[in-house]
Image (cartoon, rainbow, N blue to C red; front, top):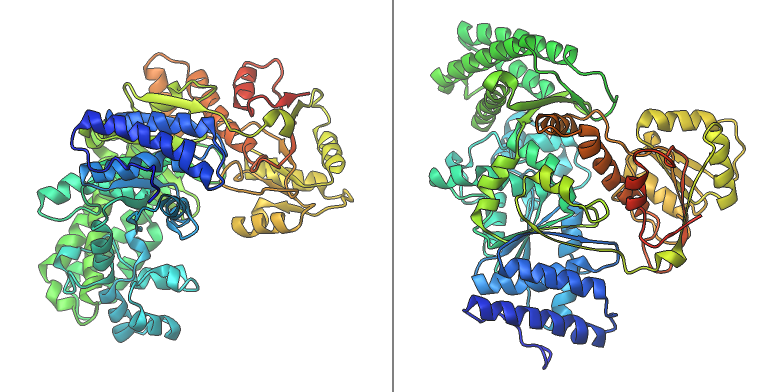
Length: 634
């Protein structure tokens, strides 16, 4: 360890720990890291001190820091000492498994920092349980049904970790047959305590410093934690001392999904077909499964008829009306009846269906019953429902998550850090604070350390009558190398039609033509290419000459989305204008992300051009507030 470094791990007095922590953060950022070639960044130091104060004062803190700030080091410098001071690990919740891997990898920031400081940092990943094979289900699928390809069968026999990442070629269909199933009760499993998921949990439960999870896993634990403990079961995560939400602006959907239920018609139909094939089953079971199948068809038909007209991709808002509630009640009764019939004489079916599958069916039905009960509570006033377009599933979640967050998280008085480059609109955090149900969080905001005045030029196209001609002109002038951002896939299709007859000297890639990751890789490799999409506002990193122009074809006003609709409704109930208090700030945060695609390193340079109505509009101020600070507007 560095001679100058006095790590504040052993102080028992809270005030003394606070004082020494801030001193240590300063030593690291002003002295130790510069000795290893890192530059002193005032933005990083400011953010790190603010986070340090929030940890020691056990606050909820909103840490907004622009690209290149080094916000990961900024929060790690408090997280590691705080974990050792309290004797409990700090949880870092990431927006995706890929970011989890990136943070915890040998080349990631945790390993880099521990090496620079000469510290042995104990950081372990807690992955989504669905990423692990279930030994019982896998063996039954192999031995009894022969439903697993030979290479997967060999892998099941040889693997010690049982993670899906070890066998990336396995299809979703096969993986569903052999992976952990949340509908099954692990507490009653014959392999309890010996399976790979349990071993994985035992491994990360022993973490001293940091547990790296994804948002879905964190909220699965948060919403089920108290019930599991009350029933004498271990929660998914061990007791922790604080939580950091990396990319904290992306937690509402996973929080909602983990608090609600998803009914997948195809999966329920597969369960019904399997039950109907049971040899020697009593007539009562056949009668009830036939009734369930009819109720299922009716429910999904009415759900589709109740869809509010809107976007043709993603989540389609479902109006919770009397017809839907009646169909839900009938479906719930049908599920109850089949569940009862299965439990009456379950032992009769063991030769036709393995125990694990029957338990899975029971859990699946119980989850669906809970979801339908949630839908019907208070005549649907307490729920949000939608159809998920990618699999035609029906989702129902609580309308108000803020009370749940307060009860399960904020009231525990644990430090909770929301870290992101987009939490505010020009320093105004009101929208995020209201959306998350926060009362008095501390806040810090700092821009990017990059020289935006030298690196970015911004222009607004004044004449919008000839938008496509304007687009072609700017693309040709830039030699391609552009990202065109739209609001919807239908608009992507329109741009393709517009450009169809143009002889452009570069390749144009469209979002609906292939896998998103594949398209981004081609965009990087084909340096003069153009990428057009509605789903590239965030999460893509293309530094260098492959991206020197971002075209805002449409401002990202929020789509007709059930979660946004719930926020609009809540704003109206509070006497607020939903356009001003929801639509404008939501658009501003998304636009800030889109503009952030342009400059990824201190060497990057480029333009942001708006070919949509901005100047003189009520939302012009919001747009200007989302632009890179100090960038030149031409």
